[in-house]
Image (tube, rainbow, N blue to C red):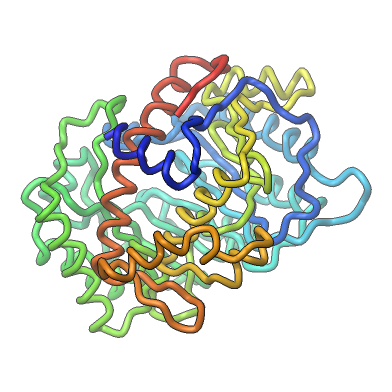
Amino acid sequence: MSIITDLTRMWLTRSTKPFAFKNEYDQKLPYQRCENLGLYVHIPFCRRICSFCPYCKELYEKEKCDRYIDALIKEIRMVGSKDGQKKQVTSLYFGGGTPALAADRMKEIITEIRRSFVITEGIGAELHPENVKVPVLRALKEAGVSKISIGIQSFSLKYQSVLGRKPIDVSAMAKALEEVSFETVSMDFIFALPKQTFDDLKSDIDLAFANGANHIAVYPFIDFTFTDSSVRAMSKKKKKQLLDAVTNYCLDKGYVRSSIWTFSKGQDVKYSSMTRDHFLGFGCSATTLLKKQFKINTFSVEEYIKRIDSHQLPTSLTLRFTRRQRMVYYLFWTAYSTKVRAEDFEKFFGVSLERMYGWELQMAELLGFVTKKDGCYQMTLKGAFYYHYYENFYTLAYIDKMWGIMRKEAFPERIEL
């Protein structure tokens, strides 16, 4: 896997230099001139730990969660504008963990964010199915949350058992969602589980849209080396068949494909914290992407709190991009939306996309991965699958390695990928 990603990185960056993450950071982050800037806040607490989940999380304790939120608000204040000029941002997303466990303090966090930022496209928050209750939903909505994402994973008892999840009371969930409405109600599902069929996924999709969802995300199962999961993902061929079947089914039903794995009931129904040119991340393990740097916060809740209390940012590692490295990062995550616009690339980098990657784009067209129309490169079904296929290699070669180290070391000296 590392050979494939290493060769791809060297070819696209035109360099043998790896991505070098170092134990350093800027005390003041240069985000004021960044356009299309998003915000992300990580709440790392869960009632139970799912064995398959790779994200930074730990068991919920009220006292520890409150200390963490206190530190989180301080971090937001440290990064926020010091000159009274509020920065316009596209969106704010709360991920985890289970952010809804901090629903009683969400308004406090959002109020602090609004002292420095103007949010133009809404606020999203993730929920466990057990959180989908009227009091929790009301608390989130009153705090300013306009979009929610519910981590269903599967409605099927068979796969709930495989994933170590409890059965979901679908009717109670639907009733709560009807009583407290949101602009976007997204439901997440996992595909490529052992012996999973299209009928299994079709049932999940239909149940979601029939019970309050107007947006779904169907993510592939990825077998991270550091998780305790005993689940093994299916073969490449079966994965492709499933992803193609799900995509064709959703498109035939008239749903809009807004990214590789997401479908919605309308063009304006969106839920994604990933497709931003730049973003600021707050909290444990949160990442920040700016024009010339990428940084990631420590994964340790206790060390995070200590750093903040000593009036320092909780950055664990920072990558200073070369120009080509930034281009590769831009293209990789922009392509997640299934399209790359040449005009946007040129505006961002000051050079044409075709000049930098014309040969690669021609090959992608010849291989049937993309089509080009009016300066926009749009992924085909084949291209979307192979994006997913490569993303799996990238995840295991890069993210798996980095997160595996950072789960053990709060502030590693250096990581090369």
